Amino acid sequence: MTNAKTNITTEATASQWIGRRQQQEDSLLLRATKRSAAIFLSDGMGGHRGGAIASKIICAELCKHLRRAEAWDKTAMRRAIDAAHTALSIKAAHTGLRDMGGTALAVRTDGQSLYWVSIGDSPLYLIHRGQLTRLNADHSCAPILDEMVRRGEMSEAAANADSRRSALRSVVSVQPIGLVDYGCRPALLEPGDIVIAASDGIATLEEDVVIQEAMASTTASHLCTDLLKGVKARNLPDQDNVSLGVIYVKRVRLWFG
Image 1 (cartoon, rainbow, N blue to C red):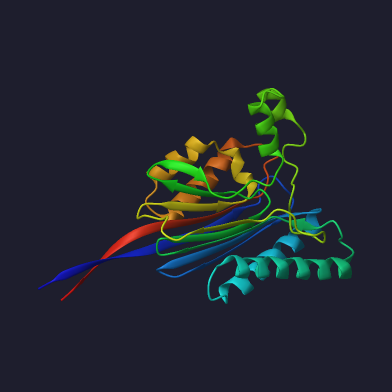
Image 2: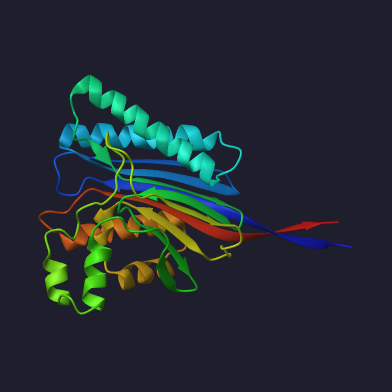
């Protein structure tokens, strides 16, 4: 008698584009197997040199500590964030780059489970059955301004034009860390789901464009390439660095017996 067993597998890829900036200040790492994938991303700040150094430190520390953690629980995630903060503070003291810092985003899929920790405004998206949802908290001032619009305290146009909109309320820097978003969804993912981790340079694309590209793509690499093409096609003179990590969740049927 022949039987079949269904396994969840992943396909992952990552890519970057410098945009219209003089230097790439984002850092991006991908670690993947057939069953699981992890993306580590940081969008640096503090000037060209400081931003690039900060993002590399943040990514490296998150990757080092979370890859050797037995589980991506809140304790392990906090330990990794604290390690990044310590390493960055030491580097800042040695270089004099006291203003450097960056966002932090680490996400892992393992079968149907999804885990993440994030600081700042680098978005984590899930595309599930054709619907795009942002999973992690936005630590910029945008949510505060949007809430003021909802309460009737300011117009939508004023909120969108407000110079504080992109200001960050929490980052990894030499200062004490403020807001941290932890996520653990043990049975969230289904075959066909797509997880996207990005720097905020992806905001050039409207959400419906991201969904459209996702529905037309057949592989993680295909989607990553098409999204970057979409950003480039906008040809914005001030386009920020863009970093993308894409994870496809797939079903594989194993036959035995």
